[in-house]
Amino acid sequence: MLFLSLILVAFGLVYYYFKKSLTYFDKWGIPYRPGWPFLGNMAEMLVGKRMFAQVYEDIYKEFPDAKYVGLFEFFKTSILVRDPELIKTLSIKNFESFGNRVPFIQASVDPVFGRNLFNLQGEHWKSRRTVLTPTFSSLKLKTMFTLLTDCVEKFMQGVSKRPAESNIGVDIKDLFSKFSNDTMASCFFGFVVDTMKEPDNEFYNRAKHACNLDGYRTLPKLMHFLRIKIIDKETEDFCHNIIKSVITERLDKNIRRQDAIQIMLDALGDEAKKETMDYDHITANTFSFVFAGFDTNSAQLGILAHNLALNPDVQKKLQDEIDQVLKEHNGKITYDIIQAMPYLDATLQESLRIDSIAVQVERVCSKPIELPPAVPGAKPYTIQPGMSIIISPTAIHNDPQYYPEPRKFDPDRFLNKRWNVNNPYFMGYGIGPRSCIGFRFSIIVCKVGLFYFLSKYSFKPNEKTTNPTEYKQDAFNLEYKNGFIVDFVPRE
Image 1 (cartoon, rainbow, N blue to C red):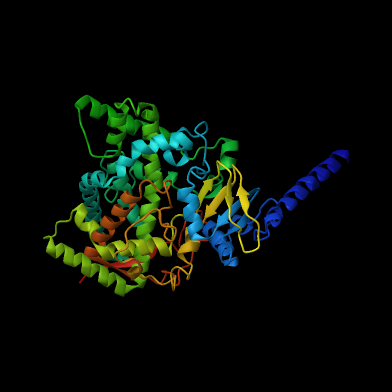
Image 2 (image 1 turned 180 degrees about the horizontal axis):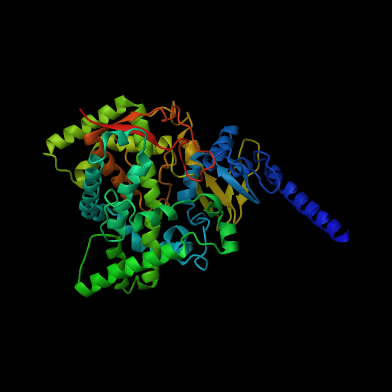
């Protein structure tokens, strides 16, 4: 009986503590949505009623006059920043105070994922980013362009061999994942694979498994406590063996290839960069590019196909631009040519706006910084080290104040607007110095894939193509309720 009483008292004290913490923001007059003890504002997400992105968007919409609002993420208090100019200030001007992400998992638990650029902090992140940034320069992407066109040509050959009836009710994201896989293998791991011809190749299966973030793998603290890896031992060994084999062959035979491994391998011979790069780090960062790009690129192509199927006028306008470019250049495409296509560029930007793959942008405070009052009449608030700010690209991108008729797919919004990772009104790849390092690569992969596909085929809506778009509520990343289901037919 005494033991039971002690448990009840302890539970009561813990409950009281968390209940009291849910009034934390009252002192500064910061608006917030009331939360539940232990769950905060995440209850709907936890039971599969709303996605992460939708929870943040709901709270964003609830307080239209606030620059920022209080947020309760389970046991943690955070700030959801609403005002785009404040977002820009914190992400760029005050980058020294908000330069770190929340580590997804520690290297002591997961040596591959824990050492990748996404997970690194402070000076470790800065030095590694300096080494890796040249991988995605325009010059390097131009040299990789041949690798990409080799991949897409093999992909299109595979598509052309499919029976016509198999192109009805297709999960187009799944189909494009085969193209995405081949680009990752070629440009980052330095070897060639044809997933349309060999759909069960090990690289493809490993990449699909690693990018599955459902269930417990979305809870990094639990994974750290239980010492569960994101990258399992078999996949880790597979990656190490590929990297070791590729590097050994290049060193023994003095082979050079214009890919990411070569850039990191060159860093091993540069004394100024040697401390930031070793063979384990090459494996970690090479696989992190696959982790970041495999699912993202195929999902973005799925979003494009879905919206083009539902908007045939937009699709026709884009195909006209593609046809004109092919005619002007005798069917030969280069990096510069495809990058100079304004409507293709605008269509990709609009697809990133209407359905953001980036669920959230989160930054951890490392130095105290004062915020202006959240609403008129409130007090300034000083964020302390360890506290996070959350930014919701989905909410900004679907705010009619910035994008009239936000659920309308209208590429004309972005005609002749340049990509800018410092734009707080458009955060398709994040914002500021810690935006996605590989965004230029992702852009060119999506453009190449879409260009080649639409030169031969047209997307059509299927009876399972949701309109208006419906989402899978229990998914961590953005997923459509029925999948990315469309039909595609040869062009007339």
